[in-house]
Every structure is written in C-alpha cells, then in structure tokens.
Image (tube, rainbow, N blue to C red; front, side):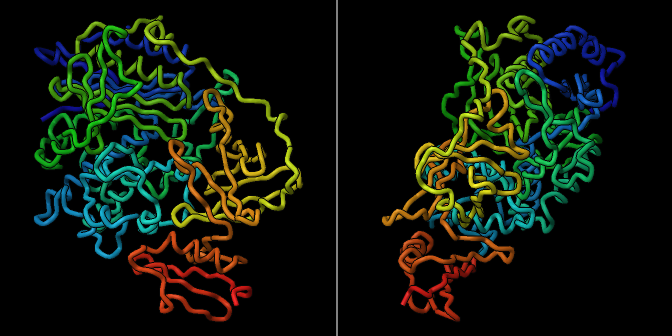
Length: 589
C-alpha cells in the first residue's frame, strides 16, 4: 500500500513519516529559482517520491509569460518520450493476459499479412523486445515527425509505410533510437487490445491511477491548458506555436502524453510500488513489469556521461530497457528516461533500491541552457532524497559543465540578407513536387521568382537558396522558424537536388534523419488524398529505374503486373500494401 496527498509538501506525524516530512525543501526551492533565472527557463514542474509517499509536488516560474500565469503543481506540460514507458507498461499488461503472445513473439505472427519492414529478415523475426529496446536498426528519421505527417494518415497507414524505410544498421547489432518503432509497438497494442492506443492507456493506466489531468496532446481540445512553449531568441524568451504539438500524430505511442507534477507523482508511485494502484490492487503483473526495467540493449559511451575524477560524481548510461534506460548515478542503479517535444523537456528518474523517484519538466527553451538547468535541478532533487552531499552549488549550477568541462559558446542566427540567387540556372527548373513512399510529398514553389519555398509535412515551410546548382540551404519561416533561427539552433538545413544524365532535376535529397545520409524524394511522385501514388510526365526508362527500388529482387516485375489502360501504366508494387503507380505513357511507344 502507499499513500497520496494533494498537498505540495506532504507532512506526516510520526516515526518514518515524521522523518520523511522533516526534509527542508526551502533551500532546494531557492536553488531551483536561482537556476531557472540564470538559465532562462520560463517554467518548471517538480515531483519527488520516497518510500511510497509523495513528498513534494510544485510548480516554478511561469506557465505563460504574456499573461504572467504561474506554473503550479497542476500545470500541464508535454512529457514527450516519457510516453514510451506508458507504451511498454501497457504492453506488459496486455501480454500478461495472453497465453500465446510474449515479448519475443514475432510481430508478423500478430499483424499477419498487414506487416512488412524493409527486408525479409526483419519482417520475419522482429519482435516487441526488439522494437521497445531500439534494436531494429531503422534510423530515427525525426525530421518527418518534426514537420508532421498529414492528419489523415492513420496509425495503420503509418505502420504500412515502414516497409519503405530502409534499415541502416544490422538487425539487433546496435542501439538505434526510433520513435517509428514505438508507433509500431502502439499499433501492436491496438491489435492485441482491440481498441486504439489512447483508449487502452486511458482505461488500463490513467483511470486506475487517478491521473485525471493526464492525456494526449494531439487530442487536447484547448491547447491553452498547456504551459506555453518558449525558445531563446537574442537572449530573450519567445513563445512558439502550441499547435506544433499536433505534429506528434500519428506517433502518439512514442511521445504524445501531457501531464502535471501531481499526476506524475502517481505514475512514480505506481512503478515504485511494483505495478499496484493507490489501493494496493495490481494493475500490471510485477513479473511482466519488471522485464521493462531490465537492460535489453547496451548503449555506447555517451558524451553526456560524467566520470570521476573530471567530475565530482559518476553518472553513466549502461543500456536501454523497454521504455526506460538504466544508468548508474553516484553508485546507485537509476531507471530513467528523458522526453522532449517542441520545446518541452522532461526527465524522470527512479532509484528502485532506494524507493525514490524524481520528475522534472520545463516548458523551454530549446537550447543547451535548458539541458544544463535540467542536469542541475534533477541532480539536486535526487541528491536530497538519496541523502548525498549535493555536487552542484549555486555557482556551478549556472556555469555547468564548467568548471569541469568547457561549455559551448552560445550561437546566434546568421544574417538572412546574405542569401541571394547566385547561380545561372533558373528557379523554374527546381519547381515541382517530390515524393517518398514513407514520408510523403515535398513541394518546391516560388511566388516572386526571386526565392524558392520548400514545404514538407503539416508544419514544414522554409526558404531555400543555392550554394551551387545542386546544393541548397534552407531556413524555416513558418511555425518551425526556431529550428534554424533560435539560440543554439542556427545551422541551415542542407538539401541536394539530383540531376539526370541529361541534366534535368529529377530528385531531391532531404535530411529526414538529421544524423545520417539524406533521403531521396523522387520528382513527380505524388501522394494524393486517395492515398495512391501518381508519377506524371516522366519517361518510361525513369519508371523502370524507380520500380527497381520498390520491388523485391526475388519478385521481379512481369508483364502480368504491368498493364496500360487509357494511357496510364499501372504497377502493383506488392500484395502487402496495394498501391498503383500511374505513369503517363504518351512517350513510351
């Protein structure tokens, strides 16, 4: 059993309760206020739990600068990838109720003919353990989620598109973080549970745990209920569009949950109390829940790891679990995760052996300052509950990583006036629609014949200018302006146009995954509202080159799979995802 109180500082009367309530939070609160000020963090929420009791829930700073609305323990913050633990916990509950499915059951056996990845090996063998531990080898491709998929793309549609995303690492060989795989995991939960992921999370976890102020940001009716998100621009906090939180669709199982410090204290209690609700009733089998805490995939050494003697303490990542990671902090096993969406940042740390949990969340800014502030505040909270001497003071909390490691210098946006059309090739040559089977359309257009505008996804809009005839740089101008125009986020987006042997522009290479090679978008490959791809005004030889990339080499194109009807050449790519590729053939014969 555990107890819960709505008070922001929980006070009890005697014995162990008195010992817990004797913690003086006033010094901690002064520390937090100081760090938020020096790091220019607008608002924060904090929850602390120890020995199955909520010790502290509070808000700091401002939820909205313009209205001067204060952040409280009931303020809603987006928690980003802390959502992943909700997905893995939900699956632990669902699997515990099944006799014929477990973590190692191939997903193909669950989804049947509706599932395929980019190669036969992964398609046949990938399981929930692989997906939840980031072992599949498929790139993050975060840029496509950043700009947002079309709102008419369902989770089922999204999963079907996964077959067109090539893996770049050997299967089960390396940790490769992927929101796409968590979306797949959420879809598997839907198939097993018979309801959509949101309903399953609500009914299985949020309602039993009385997390009444927790929900899904892409389903939130009034986005003004959220703490406003902020970035730093020229040293000042600037609000960004809360509508950007909609970009999480349809990848909700990877990061769509919003919550409050009070509700997250209940989530911590649930995990520290071995999967039980406030009345001690089991919500999730302890055996199945424990598996989500175990390391499944070792992680490489991180630049964010802290080691003695350079730092006063050790904080080292060991590996990734399922919706959680495992680290060692000051000699203690730490089960944790971080989360970020738009400019919101959150961390949740659990110390199971000490029965301690800490949650910290910010509403900005998207900068190194926010990361350093998070390190200072959550470490201080953990030290307080662990009864360890704090390793950061008021000075080092505002200088971190200095004096132990040199901090990066702040970077300012470059001068937009320097961008000119400095090549002989016409704007017109680049105008058109470029498509990808998984990521959709990118359009390039012009309104004044002096500059090009690139549009990608729901929110992506940027001006692009030439560095050479094939290489362009882009800077976001719409709601996502801060991705290339705020403090610590100043690098332009690099885009390459691909030319044919004849010199025609027939493709665009876009950094869908910020960390690896660019992805090719084919010119005139357009995904229409009927979800069929259309290739227009192309030559037949180009279509043959294109289809070779789509069709498995073991299943070559045959005359039976191609036919001409009313001058439209149709190719059925495969039986898993029936799509017809239409090519005008006026120049074919």
